[in-house]
Length: 149
Image (tube, rainbow, N blue to C red; front, top):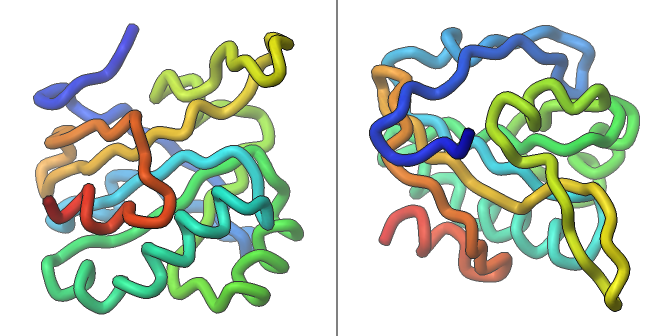
């Protein structure tokens, strides 16, 4: 099932980089940018995360909370956050539970080989927990402009 604008965002509970558990419903009343990315400290993912970091104040001013999601561990997320000075939380979805809820774990292809991985996708969720936008063709270096656009 593919989520689209107008759908209720699936409720989830997951651990962030510091080991604390968060739920999507914790952010009711705020707009959430939930971005799924393949891997910490890789070129595209770093460009995307740093673009959100560089525009974080503007995003906050518009009422957004930013949450990144990948299959990396809490420890990996801590290193990524420290190395890139990321001001937002990263969800350690090592069991792909959040990925599966949002349909972002699927078949990919690189160099002619098929494999399972994270489908880079961003969900913009409104104050009521409804998806207002799904961005599947992410421009990693200009992602904030896509969201604000």
